[in-house]
Length: 283
Ligand code: AMP
Ligand code: MN
Ligand code: MN
Ligand code: MN
Image 1 (tube, rainbow, N blue to C red):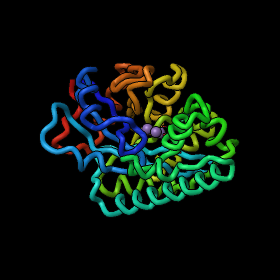
Image 2: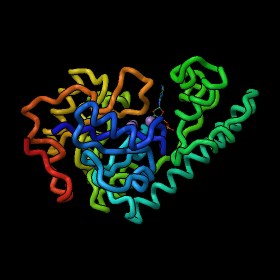
Image 3: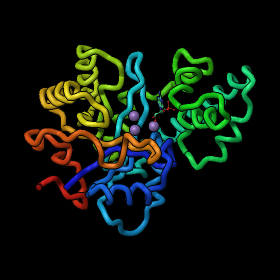
Image 4: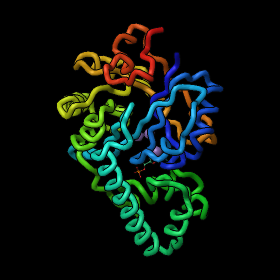
């Protein structure tokens, strides 16, 4: 068994279809793949019939905690759960509104055309990644990274913050429909170890279940710290590639540092909420 519990399709800021992700997963010997788009679940409606590997219904919700923007992955979710549907449609509207505000800032500095560009995309969740692609395509920057620095990050000249839902609301929308809530890539929030420990407490208090303890480019020290935090605080352990784009050669479906074998007993697969159709980790 090999699981990748975090990746994106074109319904958010991934570049590819679900079928492409599945092919890629098979090539890389992944047996269990969670599709976890930002703030939308449309990828799941578009997957019909039997699949050559186990597909887990997932989502990645952006939320606010203190002054930070966090990502909560939901696994084994029910996309039709009303509370989750309502929260996601609200998040999608916030995303559209933010793009309109970014467009207004870009127009002020002489850059036209973002809105028609966005409406031609298949994305249901519009992200700053899409805006970055637009600015690269129009040759305002050579890379998306440079776009974030110059335009889209807090110090950028077209920065617009987003008023995401709370951490509690994100976790509750996932768990009240029977899903498993995972704190995504905890090492990427730029917070120190003491604060990370507070965050994990708040996440657990909100009803969260697991921490992502492996993802591409995680440092060995960070992985060890996260495993210690998860296990010490009675949370499960998850991990995934956060794959978006096959042209980014440093990432691939199923590719991320392995977890130590002796942490298998804390794997998120041990969580009792996995449906009967999703085999638990036994091998
Ligand atoms: P949003 O959720 O709209 O704020 O968009 C965030 C998305 O942009 C993330 O999920 C990443 O895929 C991407 N992203 C964030 N920061 C950067 C960066 N510095 N360079 C390239 N992509 C980024
Ligand atoms: Mn993304
Ligand atoms: Mn994320
Ligand atoms: Mn992600």
